[in-house]
Image 1 (spheres, one colour):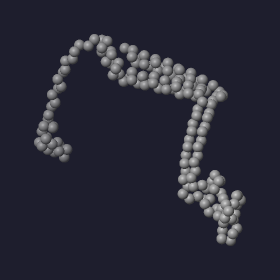
Image 2 (cartoon, one colour):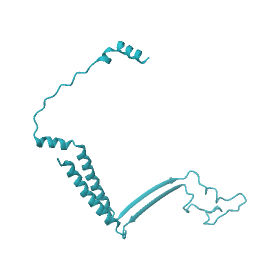
Image 3 (spheres, helix red, strand yellow):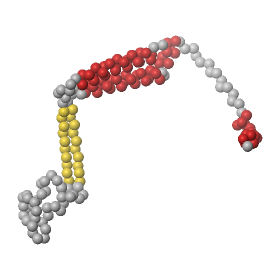
Image 4 (tube, helix red, strand yellow):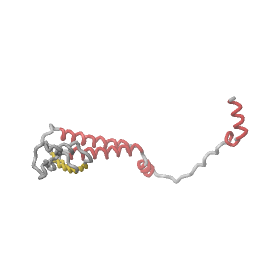
Length: 164
């Protein structure tokens, strides 16, 4: 069965089955000096690009470790719109005239709870936070030493990648 399929393919598509590709012509280039060849190799070397990415990473680590010495300030603002609240019918006066709860009277015999922080229709929240590391047990100094040594290691990696 397999040989019949091969025979049919050879008969129907002889150019695909028996074609031979001709070798690509050899291009003659211009002579290149050793310095130019090393410059071209350095510019297109994957190993050097990886080593330089390590240098960039180590620089970011040094910045990140240095930032922890400075104060941190963060702010958030949020808005909530309440469609239905579990407090909406809690303090209304019933038809018998007995209201529940305590608060200032709104003049109609009911209690005005609009000034309370829960159950409102629109709620805005703002938060401002300021932090400063005062005592951290030497963690920041250790991170800076680690980042400095990582930068030295990355520089050695670049030098070794460029070595002939």
